Every structure is written in C-alpha cells, then in structure tokens.
Amino acid sequence: MFQMMHLPLFCCLLHHRGDVCFVNDARLSDFYRGWLIEITSIELGFQIVCYSPCREKIKDTTTYSSEIEALQVARHTINWYAACQAISIFLRGSFEADCLCFEEWRSLHQSLRMPIKAQ
Image (cartoon, rainbow, N blue to C red; front, side, top):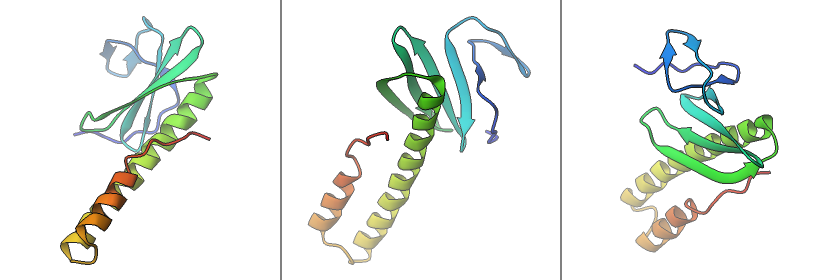
C-alpha cells in the first residue's frame, strides 16, 4: 500500500535500502499528495516529472532556474491535475443527469486539457 509521505527534498537514486538513499545520479525527489516528484538537473537548470500513485506520468520539459522553483511548479501541476480530475467527474455526472448537452460536455471537457502555465 502506498503511504502518503511529506519528506524534505532529498537525493533519489536507482537503489534504496530501507530509508537509506545512495547518491549516484543527478535527481532530486519529493512526495506531494501521494505523488512522486522527480527533479532532474540538466545543463541549464532543472526539469520535473511527476508520477501518481498508480504511475501516471506528467512530464514538464520546461527548464527551471532552481530546485525550489521546479518543486513549486511540480506541486502546482499536481494540484491542477487533481482539480481537473474532480471537474471532469462532475461534468460527466452532469451530462449523465441531463444537465448538460453533449456539445456543452465536450467543450467543457476539452477545455480541461489545455496546457497550464506556471506563474
């Protein structure tokens, strides 16, 4: 069972033993709302990949200037994704209850797939 953990940013590696993490690559990891956030150091900054508890992957190829900025964007992305999922469920229920016609449902549902802009 996946346990939601709020840990400080720490080095993540390919192999773990218990709570010990061995340094052998340029990735930082954190957990947020049950999601794993990986921050990868690249030549010009940092990039993020987020994994849900069921291993859904959200990758952002934007380069961020610091680990903190990348972590903030990753958390914002996870919040955005969760909000879109909740709205999608609500829209489906509204459509099935005949509160929305198909065109309204489709238009609203497609608007949830628009890319987000980090601030």
